[in-house]
Image (tube, rainbow, N blue to C red; front, top):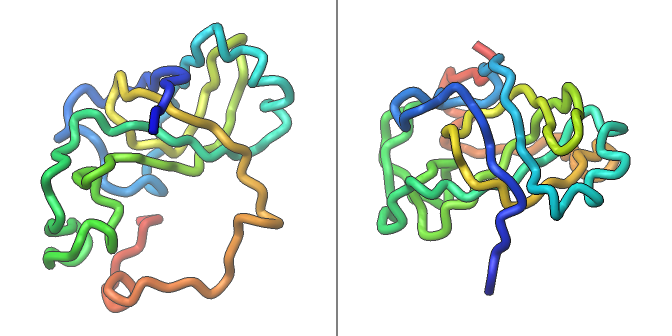
Length: 148
């Protein structure tokens, strides 16, 4: 298996400690720099209000299989969380696409470390991506609200 980096994320978060823990509460604007060899892949991207971005959390600890979350302070397996520390540290976020300027995309609602490798972009399509009635029991039992 081989992944090809398509760009880089530029954000105000220069250290892991500075990265907010919940995407929906973050209001910073960040830039996705798409490498010029992939410019043709951006055709019509500006027609999307939201995009899904996939990135490689290259500073993550790939040996961790369990961790304590900031939501309930309990230990969970990484496959039951969105923790960055995991065997394959693939991050994904649904972000607002604010503007396209050449090979740069301005986006909102992302919590990635500055310099994070970008590995893919897909449009968010509510008709196929929105699933009503989903749950994750351990989060549902808390009073955590990502929109706080």
